[in-house]
Image (cartoon, rainbow, N blue to C red):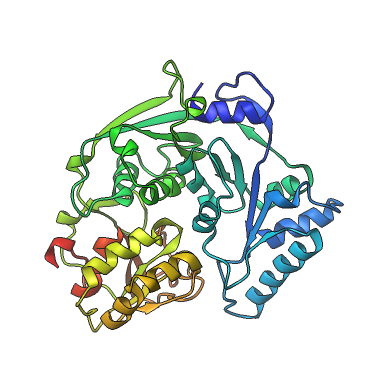
Length: 403
């Protein structure tokens, strides 16, 4: 079996599973946020739920519209808090202790290799970076998990990706996954497990691994996963893969996703002159401390272009504090950026950077669909933190080498 199949078999009490099998599996961790959990709570109550299956295995994080941007978002966050109090759920993270969910949960050590994790958020697939099976579910499925501790799945086939070679300067996990999505398309791994492997991945830093698995959903995958290194949780040598692709990463330069799809990829050298109005550096994709360090290394002793607003969002309070201690926050503000408390905010067009008609944003987030960040007549380009920082200085999408 592949690593994904092994985890699903172990959690469904089976010796073996194969792609296409329908299983009912035990859940190790269930996640909801301020948008999706209130609907799950409503369905939980409608179904007659009284007590959650295990308060220790539920995580509730208000991060999408928090700090509350209006009355409606305040009410959503309140429902989360009240449910956590009523059910004695210890893993409720209020403002001041919170962070963007997919950065906070690994930081808190709540997900481990071999775990099965579901979350009512599509980017739950991020936790595959630590060797867990993690996938997004709907709010009604989350309600069922709250009651039973179980969730049903169709076992996905596994699409194996092998990466070799040394990453060039300014190229990282974001560029690997953008290049891959550009190659196979947004449905190229439809309902499949994307298994990332090879020498490049073995030497890849954890933050880059999180970025890689975070965007597996943008290729239509059920989950993304990287072997954690333990013999128990490695794919067998004779595993049956639906497809295998290999990439030489030494040939991958920084990538830019053009509107309005993460698969509309061009290497930075082929981008041309594209003026921008806004830069966002943050999100569950690229808001970790290494991302902020990369951006700071380019912004040091520089100034943001006077016609560009640049928004820096550390993904968790701990990352914010680390950046403060390292002098990065001071550096960002002197360069002309604003720094926000942890929030998903602009990524989904929620707040803290909504785009007006005709505006153009370069973002380190994960999606650039029409209207994703505000007006349907705005445009969003995706890139890594180095490209984002360089572009903020130049006022147009730019290669970091230009700085």
